[in-house]
Length: 86
Ligand SMILES: [Zn+2]
Image 1 (tube, rainbow, N blue to C red):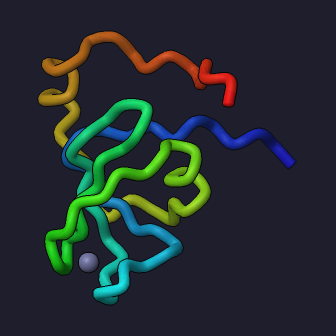
Image 2 (cartoon, rainbow, N blue to C red; image 1 turned 45 degrees about the horizontal axis):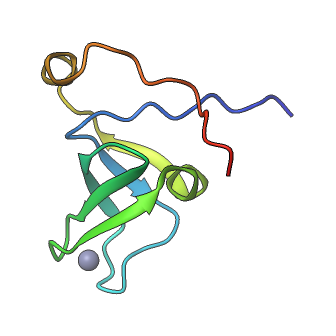
């Protein structure tokens, strides 16, 4: 199997995840990027943090893409490849 490319996330992306929220929603808005990814449930508004690795495992598809121009303004440096050793 080919190695999956690192999932590229942008602020404002809406994702569909394999695991739905207890409220029944399965789409999440990305509102924080870092070692943990901040996600807001689009159905009930609850906010959660997921480790990037966990998010990548649960990721199904993009529902809506964030604004690339906005993200370029926030950080002009591309994210480094996973260099966390855990
Ligand atoms: Zn929810």
